Image (tube, rainbow, N blue to C red; front, side, top):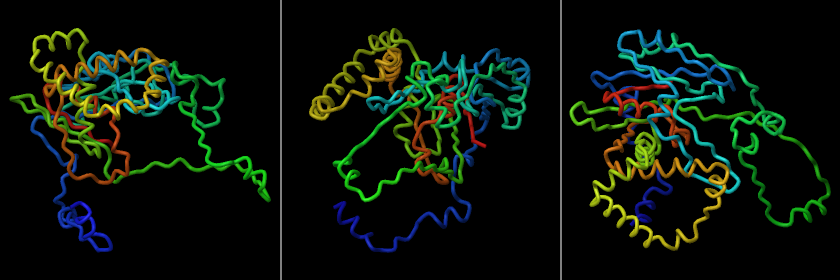
Length: 348
C-alpha cells in the first residue's frame, strides 16, 4: 500500500497545499499564540565566553510590579539536569542545567530568567539584575581546544576535545605508497549555522482550572520533547517516587508488566545493543547514573501528570536545528508548572 501511494508522486509535480493559507496571513506560528493572563519570559545571558558566577543580585528586578526572577540555583533545585540520551564510546557528554549555576561557558549562556506581565517589563527588569563574574581563560578556537595546556571547560572531561573518531576504509597505506603524487594540505572552512526565518520559541499554556499544560513549540520533535519535558521538569527524589509507586501499586504493576512485555518483544535487539557509550559516560562521571535514575523513576511515578501535551503547528524553517531540546523550553515549562500560569518566550 505504501509503495503504491509513493508511486503516485514519483516523477510528478505535487501541488503544495499550504501556500494559500500562509501567503494570506492565516498561518499560526508560536509567536501568534496569545493566552489570557500569560506571563512573558526574557533570559539574562552571559557577556563572557568563560567565567565563574559569583553574587547575583535580583533585588531591583523583583521590585518591579508583577516580576518574578528565577536564578540558576533556583532552577537546579526544581529540575533534573539535561542529560544526553545518545552515547558513543569515547564521547564525553556533560550534563547541565536549564540555567547556568556556578560557571558560564559561552557568550549567551542563560544565567537567569525573568517573568513579567509583558515582554517590555521583563526586558526592563532583566537590565536591573547585577551579576558578579570572575572571567576565566576562554577556549575560542580549534587550536586552543587541542592545546592540553588550556583550561578544561568541563572538569571531568579529558580535555576540550569531547570526541575523536577516525574511520579507515580499504588499504590506505598501499594506495598512498603507489600514488604518483601525494599532496598534503590543511583545509579550513567557515563555521556554518542553519538559520530559519522563525526563531525558536514556546508557549506553556496552563489550563487555569485543571492546571493541565499544552506546550506549544516550534519543534521538529514533538513526541520526544513531550517526554523529555516530563523527565526534566518532574523532579523528585527517588524516595518520593518510591512512596508514590507504593501508594499506587496497581499503576506500578501495570508499568512493570508493560516493561516486561516490551523487553520480551525486543529481546534480540536489546541483547545486540551496544552499551559501550553509556558505560564510558558513567565511568567518567558516576553522578550521571543517579541523575538518570531519579529522572526516569520520577517520570514513571508521576506518569501523565508530569507530561505536557506538545503541539507544533506552522514552523518557519528548521533544517534540523529545531530537532533538539533547548534549555529555554525546559526553564519555561518548569516555571509554568511551579507558578500555575501560562508563559510565553520568543527568541529575539
